[in-house]
Each structure stands twice: as structure tokens, then as C-alpha cells.
Length: 421
Ligand code: NIG
Ligand code: FE
Image (cartoon, rainbow, N blue to C red):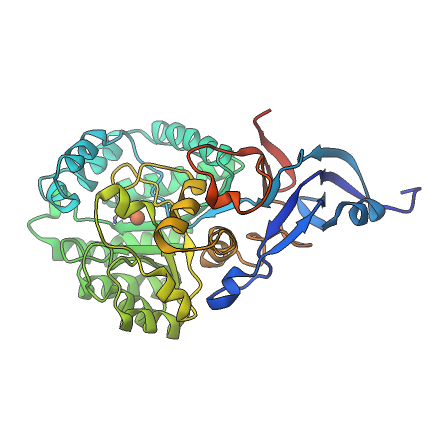
């Protein structure tokens, strides 16, 4: 440019704070709390990436942009990365919520044919078009809540064709919508009705037909299992996930959510990328996760929603050096919310995480758990320009305020994709 400045596409200015963890590796132990906070900061965005971030005067001295966006004295953070969701379903389960509030347990409802199986009926009956339409509407909501990348599990099809239908819907939604989706095959979410009398045959089907077909399609990056005695025990889980890994899929797991089965130890043994839930993890399990570098993905709203007393021992995990990620676990049964802001507050209230720790867990650590630590999860030169603008004065409001969506604008890949005002 003639003024000697470099050209950017968009300059975001007027932020009271730009707050972000730093780096491309997951942050654990004492490092989890280390947050970069730039008061009066600005960002220059070019070609979908962050070209510069720093004090406004410094950024303006070096960059000029065709367009500018005023953060109006608010907070700018990396777009949230939701590392665990089940967003492909048709129909909702509000009657089960009422049953639980009335005293029924999640497992009681599942054993009586409700729970996951009621969503399986919904997905099998729904066309791909309907599933896509519902998923796109949910992605709009994620975006309005400041979430720019979402891990998306299947798991309500539970047959070869129905699981493939869900993976295809995820791929189509990913192409059609600014929110990025990271697909996970969760064919081992429960046993479908037609295999209830012969669960071993479903494990055979998963290993011999479904997983090879999924891997061949290239439509899933990860495979996952709901490891719990009433669904897939440790032996079945080991067999399914070893097969997935052999076929080139990364491993994520639902472990120690409802009972202390030793799922964390199994996740470590299998080299899982993430071990999720962990309300009933043991001290040995925590050591095993730390030894194997597994990321615990914590979902603080789920026990609250299920009316379960147990709590994931997040502080013990952090003391052991682990680098937790946070997630909604958005699904129609055990946690019907897409709101990462709410997750941050409850991570503070239930786990004792500071705002800085909760933000790193909900952005960088979650991104690393999805294999995307080098490209998203923090606001640094070279990373993708995925950011959320909130009308709060500082990063402590991320946990302090709850029950209101303070997200005013969202930028994804350098484009303004959501604006409230
Ligand atoms: O993460 N744990 C298993 N799966 C979900 C619940 C799914 C459902 O109830 O539909 C979870 O809690
Ligand atoms: Fe889940």
C-alpha cells in the first residue's frame, strides 16, 4: 500500500480485552491458567487468518484494512471449540427429562426402551434431508453462541446404512455452514433393538462391516464407544476401538461416566486422543491418562442435568498435569444445550476452574483434542481467524455471568458470519 502499511481484509478494534491461551499444544497443570490478555487490543485479519494481534496503536501502525469492525469496548476471544456433541438426531426427549426430575434414572429409562433407543427410532425414520435441515438449524445456534468448531458424533443410527446416512449429513452440513464439524463414528453408542438378544453379533458387525465401511468412506476422523457395563464393557470396547485404530481412525471414548469401570485406564492403554466424562475416574485412572497424554474432555452440565451427584475430579486431574478440554455433550437425552458460555460458568462452580483455565479448556485444549491445535483454538498470527466478540468488559465475565448470551458477533475464517446488532 502507498502508506507503507500491509494490507489486511478486516481490522477488529476497540476491544477492552483480547484474551486467549497461547500455542498449539494442550495446556495442562499450572500452564492451564496462563492467559494472554491484551487490553485495548486489535486484530488484523487477512486471507482468513490472523495476520497480527496486539495493542491497537501498534496494529494500526502496521496494517490498514478495507473493512473494520468495532468491538465496542467488549471482549474478544477465540471461537469456542465444542469437543463433544451428538448433534444428528430427529425429535427431542423432553418427557424423559420430566421422568428424571420425578426420580427416574438415566439407566432405568434406557432399560425401559427410552433413552438412546428412542432417538434411534427417530433417526431411522427421518430422511437425510430432514436430518440435514435440523442439523443446520442447530449449527446456526452454535454460531450465535460463539462456537465455531464442533465435534459431531453419529450414534443414533446403529446400522450400517443409518450410521452412513448420519456421517453423510455431517459432511453436507460441514460444507454448507460456516461452523466446522469434526466427524466421529459412534456406532457403539448402544445395541440396536434387532441385536438386543445377541449383542456379540453387533460387536462383530461393527468390527467386520461397519468400521471398514466408515473408514473407507473417509467420512469420520474418529471412532468412539460408550464404555459402560450396561452398554459396551471393556472387552467389547477394546475390540471395537482397536479395530478402528487399525483402520486409521483416531480414538475418543465415553468413560467412567456412570460407574467406575476403569475406562480411563483403557483409554490410556489404547492411546485414545480423548477420554470424556470421567465422573467416576479413579486415581489410577488419572495417572494412566497423564502417562499416556490423553485429554480429558469434561462435560460439567451432564451430571447436573442427569441429577447425578458425582463430579469429575477436575482439580485432581489438573494437579496431575492433565490438560482438560470442556464440552457441552449436546444431545437430546443427557444434556440438551449448545451453550459453551454456560459450560464455562459451571466448570467454575462445579470444578473450581478460573476463567482463564475454563477459556483455555474451551478453546485451545479442545482444538488439540480434535487434532486442530496448529490451526485454531487461540488468537495468534498464522492461526485461522475464528473469533467471538462479547459485550462484557473482561474475561472474568466468561464464568461470572451466566444465563445470557453475551456474544455479539462471530468471525469465522476471517468472515463476519454472525452479528446480533
Ligand atoms: O454423552 N453417554 C452416552 N451418550 C450421551 C447420551 C446420549 C443420549 O442419551 O441420547 C452422553 O451422555
Ligand atoms: Fe456423549
